[in-house]
Structures are given as C-alpha cells and as structure tokens.
Image (cartoon, rainbow, N blue to C red; front, side):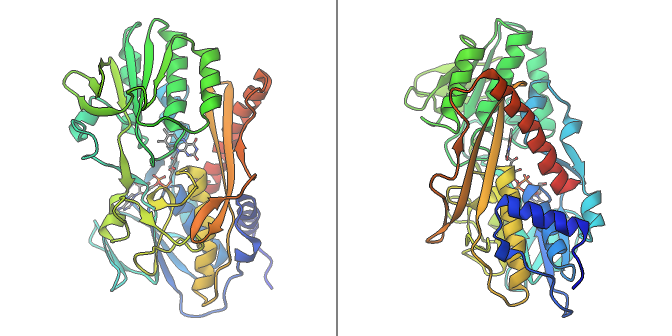
Amino acid sequence: MTPPTTSRRRFLKSAAAMGASAALLARPALAQAAPRVVVVGGGFAGVSAARALKMLDPRVAVTLVETSRTFTACPFSNGVVAGLRELSAQQFTYDKVAADGVVLAFATAEAVDPQARTVSLSDGQRLSYDRLVLAPGIDIRWDGLPGYNEAAAARMPHAWKAGEQTLLLRRQLESMEDGGLVVISSPANPFRCPPGPYERASLIAYYLKTKKPRSKLIILDAKDAFSKQRLFQNAWKELYPGLLEWVSLSNGGKVTSVDPATNTLVTDFARHEAKVANVIPPQKAGRIVELAGVTDRSGWCPIDPVTFESKLHPNIHVLGDATIAGAMPKSAFTANAQAKVCAAALARLLRGEAPAEPELINTCYSLVAPDYGIHVAGVYHPVNGVLTEIEGSGGVGPVDAPRETRAQEATFANGWFATLTSEAFG
Ligand SMILES: Cc1cc2nc3c(=O)[nH]c(=O)nc-3n(C[C@H](O)[C@H](O)[C@H](O)COP(=O)(O)OP(=O)(O)OC[C@H]3O[C@@H](n4cnc5c(N)ncnc54)[C@H](O)[C@@H]3O)c2cc1C
C-alpha cells in the first residue's frame, strides 16, 4: 500500500479532530472510470469538500466553481469593521486548491439540470457530474424587511458578506462625529453566525469607547435569547456600561421596517434615527440551491445528515450555511466539518460502498474586545435523521473566569482563524 502523502496525512489527522468518524475515512479506490464531482461555491464548505475529496480519492475529477478569484472571509471581519485589522487579512486565493489537483472554474453557476446532471456556468460552460456539491453560503432576503433593498444597503450596510460592505460600515463609523448613535438590527433565527451580531456590537463598542466615547450603540433584536448570551452580557456590563444597550424582542426590539432616506429603523414602539445603521437582514440559502430545486419553503436545504445529500434531489449534496443542519449553527467551522464528512461519504458512495455515521464538532470564538475572548463548542451526530447535539459534549466557556482566561481565549481565537483558513486555503 502506498503510504499517505503529507497533505493526506494532515487531512486524516484534522478530519479526526473535526469529528469525522474514522470509519468514514476511506482509502483511494482502484482504477475505474474517473467519477466527476462538481462543487459550487469556494467558501469554507466548498473548498474543504473539494480538497478533502481529492485527497481521499485522487482518481475523482473534482471541479470547483467559484464566482470570485479572491475569497474574503467573514470570521474576524468584525475586527475590520472596528478598525482592528485590514480587509487584506481576510483575503485568500485559490492557488493551493489548484495545486491539490482541483480544477477551478471562475464563473457563476446559473442553472442545474438534476435529470441531465449538468451545471451551466455564466461563461457558457456546461459541466456534467456524477455527484454535485452545492455550497453557496447565504443570500439576503431582499423582500424580508420593508424598506431594505440593495439600494438601501448602500446607505445602511449589512456587512454580512465580507468585502465592500465591511469597508463601508467601517468608513461610516470613522466619519461619524463623537456623540453619534449607532444602531444594529439583528434578525430572527436562523441566520449566518448566531453570535456574529453580538461580537460586532462588542467590537464597535470597543471602537466607540476608545475613539468616540460620547457615542451610543443600540442593538435592536428580533429575538429574546442569543448565542453565548450570559458571557456577552457580563462582558458588556464590565467593559461598556452605559454605552451599549440590547433591546430584546419582548422589549420591542424587532425592526419592522427601515427608511434609508433618514437612516431610521422602525419598531412597533419607536423610531431610531441612527448616524450609523447596520441592518443585518433576514437571510436564505444562496440562490443556486433555489434554482437547483433543493430548498424547501423555509428557503434553506433539507439534507441527509450522514451524506449531506439533498432530501429533494438525489446526487446533489448541500453544505454549510445553505443547509438545515439541525442543532449545528451556521458557522465556518461547521461548514468545514460538514465538508469533510461529506467528502468521506462521497468517496465511499462513488465506490458503491455505504457511508458510516459521522460525528461533527463546532467551535466558535467571539471577541468582546481585542484581549477578551469567549467561546462555544458542541459535538453533533444524527438522531432520527436530524443532527443533534450530544448531551454534555459542549457548552460555553466559564461565566466567572478571570481576565487572564479571557485574554488567553482571545489568543486561541486568533489561532482558530489561522488554522481554519490555512487548512482551507493554505
Ligand atoms: C460578521 C461575521 C462573523 C463571523 N464569524 C464567524 C466566526 O467567528 N466563526 C465561524 O465559524 N463562523 C463565523 N461566521 C460565519 C461564516 O462566515 C459562515 O458560516 C461560513 O462562511 C459559511 O461557509 P459556506 O462555505 O457555507 O459559505 P461562504 O463562506 O459564504 O462561501 C460561499 C461561496 O460560494 C460562492 N458562490 C455562491 N453562489 C455561487 C454560484 N452560483 N456560483 C459560484 N460561486 C458561488 C461565493 O462567492 C462564496 O465564495 C461569521 C459570519 C459573519 C457574517
């Protein structure tokens, strides 16, 4: 038997660490006609799936379809908003992905024909597949919040897809005078990155405290509870008293419409005219999954939790934020873990073997200040067709930890980002 290459060894090690069952890690198949797998979406899910599959079975012809030649990561982009890091630190190329033998098609997938098993691209190509993996992330529900459309986003940025929107929000904060009101609206579940709005609020509060201390920040929320809530709220009391206010759903926090002409967010009880308005709107799975017919009425994709195959169309697998993944949150770490499990299942399915039951891990850090980190973690497995958290497997960091622990967690958070992005793109 050929010994594993360094990169394959690295994958096997990290797949185990991510929770992919050892039984799923199949060996490359013997020579047969090369199966074709097309992956749409070169984010955390798509890239990880393409590379893992190629490593597990180099015989498989893997093509990755991605609109942009540069990937801009959302994790840590709240630091860019708050002026703590530059957007360039979020950006990655696909050079290493290509070096692994994945064929890159820089174009947008515009249509899927599940019967003919083809994907049509914006550059006129039509790719045939034996198995298709769709990992397009999210799209904004432009009809989800009255008054909020693409033109409004140029005035009231969402910054929920990293890039120009992230920089726009940062510039607005930089040009705001001291004493201004910043308002963030946070949507109802489900949405990309459950702790993301609260990490953003924390880092904007840090910016205001250090640069514009007479200013105020309000979070208007369509929920009564949120991820790592106690940890965030304790930290806010300690770090940002009088500066940051959270208004829950029960206290009238749900934004029912916006008026971009006056930068106003409207709730059932009040109108908030903001100097800077960050509207995080309702979301749905990226458009291509809708076009492929693998979304249900929720706008997200029901999947089999062992193979991530769509419950609506055979031979189409969906990964990452686009999925309905039971208890697993929509996070980059989740996307990466799902990708490895799916790749291992695909390697087996393409050989006519049955996939094994997986276990998947999620770990997510948030920064409340540059030297103050908190985390949540969980381990998940399929129960009656639904990804369910294994009891006692995870939870949040300690509520009463000393500041040294928070500082250490901030260091871990930086390590988390470096590891995840180097595994996907490095
Ligand atoms: C502010 C913020 C902070 C966050 N912080 C964290 C964090 O700390 N930890 C964490 O784990 N997660 C975090 N997340 C969540 C994380 O970014 C997402 O969960 C993750 O990116 C999902 O990966 P994905 O591959 O499903 O989608 P994405 O990473 O969005 O990738 C989708 C890719 O598909 C491409 N694409 C879409 N449609 C097509 C098409 N038709 N044709 C070709 N290409 C297409 C897009 O260009 C994109 O590159 C954060 C998110 C935000 C917004």
